[in-house]
Image (cartoon, rainbow, N blue to C red; front, side, top):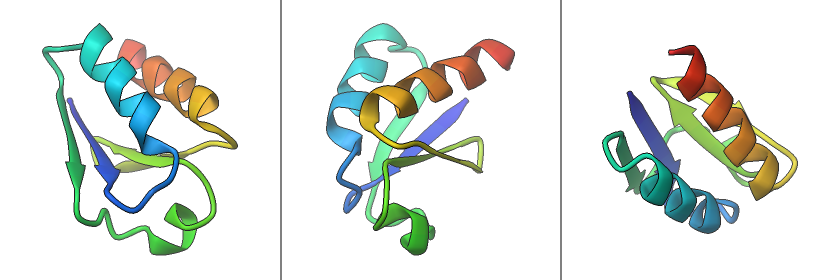
Length: 72
């Protein structure tokens, strides 16, 4: 499973650290850009297996990503 965060997204830091700690075997990276600039500038965002996941805050984003991990 690939999880990508944009370097410029404000909600990535805590979520990235939590995922790396709790799911060390997953392919999790911070990229220069994930080509979702409109959403990325407005709220926390990640791409999980090329699917955009956004949320109102970092905690909500983490929960949505964990849900996607469990479904995979």
